[in-house]
Amino acid sequence: MKIYNTMTRKKEEFIPLEEGKVKMYVCGPTVYNFIHLGNARPFTVFDTLRRYFEYRGYEVTYIQNFTDVDDKIIKRSHEEGISPEKVAEKYIKEYFVDCDGLGIKRATVHPQVTDNINYIIDFVQDLIDKGYAYEAGGDVLFRTRKFDEYGKLSHQNIEELELGARIDVDDKKEDPLDFVLWKAKKEGEPGWKSPWGEGRPGWHIECSVMSNRYLGNTIDIHAGGQDLQFPHHENEIAQSECRNGHEFARYWMHNGYINVDGEKMSKSLGNFFTVRDISKQYDLGLVRFFLLATQYRNPVNFSDTVLEQAKAGLERLTNARDNAEFILGNLADSKLSDEEKDLAASLVRYRERFIEAMDDDLNTADAISVIFELAKFMNTNVSDKSSKEFVQMNLDMFNELTGVLNIAKKATDVDDKLSQKVEEMIAKRAQAKKDKDFALADQIRDELTAMGIAIEDTRQGVKWKRM
Image 1 (cartoon, helix red, strand yellow):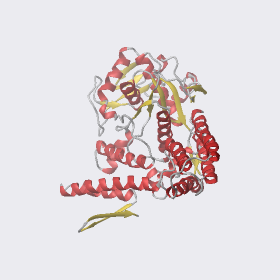
Image 2 (cartoon, helix red, strand yellow):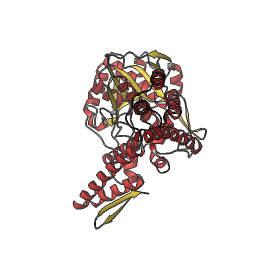
Image 3 (cartoon, rainbow, N blue to C red):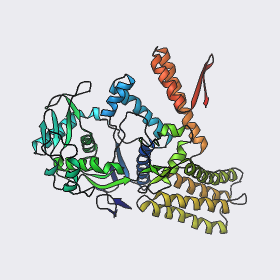
């Protein structure tokens, strides 16, 4: 398998640190709102990479964090009149609702910043002890120039970075390029005791610490959106390699941006969509298919027109599977004919070509093209005159390949999963009402409404239906 390494700007053969095992860290969301389409892309892409590694027999340890203390969370807590902890708790739950819809697996561990404060303090103290960081008025800052390789990921030199840094000069800094590891507490903000006074972690330090805690000094793959290359990932490298004395990550992977109707998605342009907004109009399984239909490093253009085209394509795949299943259900047991044996030999080639595409820097676009060719093969060669064994072989191959990408799921599978989730939420709401926790009961009703589920309290119990 070859991976395009952002660090070297070229495709490299993937060789894990430990044979048969992969250690991955993917930057997670800051939990102050519903995730947006830009978040959904890396979460979906690197979930697919993880699934593919597992398909190829690797044991994957997959870490994705939650940033649960941040200026945006504090601002939202003031807006909603609840504590920052409640804001984070609320939007972590909403994250899982959306990710379940997108078919994204739970990480091996989803660490939260607030559960790792002591580890962060120890990490920062180590950097101070080694001369890479200094305390200034309750803040702790990293001496960027002490790391000679700073800029190696984003391929920027120190002079260019210095020109940009001079725009925002902080009097506390020894150098304009220095960045914050620990922030002194301000009035109305959460804070934790530290050797430098009450405060909270800077943004960049958290991922270095949680990666180190759960995966060790050096990991196989660190991944995230293209916008994280600088300064976030650049700062992670500096902190981690200065503190640990080891290479931080062997391979760096970054997905491309999402454009909306040809323009980069941004709040300022008014073309900003949350996954929850999109789910009210489109099934999130379709959104996953749409996101994987383009190779991950290329930009994706989102529009209703493009999504409708993706919907038509996905229906072609599901129709091929449904037709084959219908035929299979009406066939008596029968073995391969001589003609089918020749066809079955060519059927295996679809798996080989799928793997070739995925091995070429996770080229899901080409992998999906192979699945379309497989669907065409099925439509051409599977009929009510086929043997049962041959039809089953086609279906097994189709389900195997679509299963790796987690696309083209059967409607019944989706409905069963949704039904189970809704029933669990209704039971939780009933318990909340029994406990007289009416605020929680109302919150669950709102969550169900956001999922497109209408509920009705009757004497016989609670009835629900899709809106």
